[in-house]
Length: 325
Image: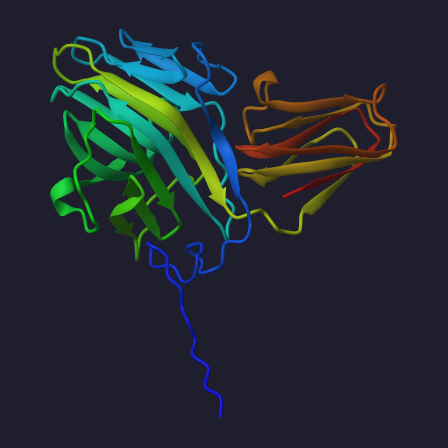
């Protein structure tokens, strides 16, 4: 008689196997969605947006430096230009390496993921907060912050040496948010009855340093920041067939991927694709295709959109199929 024992492997999160929070063995590659290391001495505006009020955002020796101002209310902030799309069935993980030149109780720094209708003010997200040398972990839903102080962490916590380079990570799912320092889970926030984010799960990377008193300036120094998806996208795309008179079509609310445009004929005047659902302007244009440049067949894009997918046709008679997810 043979006996077989079921062996269950668990990782540090308690997920079965070397797994995602959906109990799937991770064999797919980790995919970087947004964020970079900081090469050289110039902040790359193609990837990062900065905001300052007396504070500064600079780059030197391949490190990004946020310096607070020296008066109450002064700040410096940085965010990724793009957002990291959330794909159901996977999970996303924020990661940064950071050190603090010095600490002051009048200086507050937040580092993590977030979104707001008017950035850099966020209304939804998850982040570490540093007030002087005190650390808390936080989630925010529609402008309401839930904060957990270090004395109430439910994981394994040893206060890091803030002047050294440390790794801070936030793994977020729809039901839980995990906070890690130097690869150790310090706190798990669980949301059994209410969602921890109310407006979106598609977040920017963000960091800000604010003066809440009249202290000397403090520097927060970053070597990298990114958000990765744990698992590849494997899904069947959808499509929209467009024909007839000029019209505007809202094809999706929220983020996704525009795969291709199939031209069935070239009668129509033009077709414009926007990463938007309402603010369809030049700033949100993904592509503009005119009859003069269009040809029968498939135009491949395979590019992400973040706010929504809208297609506007000008002129009558266009016959096309939009393939997206």
